Image: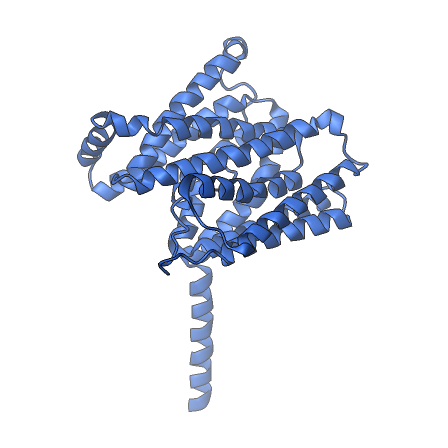
Length: 356
């Protein structure tokens, strides 16, 4: 009887541990990142059918990001009065540092608009796979601008990613179920490649700024969000002012568009949680799983055919993401490398990557 009670106790404790792990912040954030990366391309394609103004969505996405940054800073400083003093001192009184963020702010505004152009013209699988070329673009710019060293495994991973993306593109061209002319397929691919370069440049530039600045991370995020919001507003006025004057600011908006805007604004926050409570490797596995799930859902929905080119391409890109993250170059002084500096600012990026 006593042994039975002990066995029951151990079984109950084991179940409690499992539940505790499943309900932990780390696990929840990882699941959210995976679901966000998988579902957003499909949601955006559905939202695009309502013919809303994507520039307006980008604008309100930046508004929400700014609100999130302010709320977190408010929580950190303890009171609203302290928040106002901190923001005034760090942003308005220190205008020189604030203006330094103008470069990545412009780039992020461009990237967020490319996001909608890309998903309007390519299927989610092509988008998710091609977007992984940012591994290559980020590596190139990190070597050139930050003098970083890459291991031979990381260079090999970039070659794998490039070959995998090419295989997926070849598969798309041979697919009989999609019309490249009607979807402006090449325009979508160019937009994704543009996102890879803008994401890489803004991330590397901002990483360099963080290393040379003593400002709090969230203050830097507020600076970046404010300037990105300014350039997003200019984009709205320049590109869609006539349509807004004719049909209103929220033409074509429905609950799906609002959901897409909200999820894009908080997607980076989920990545930040993974980076805080897990690590860069876990974030990488989330990205890899999301690529596979996106491909599976695309096949189920009939947007892609299950072919060898698609399977090999997705497998190579997914493997390259894991290899690049798991086999970094060893620093000369044998100190652990900091792989989180760019990911900490993922809140300011679009639902891409992602995302950052």
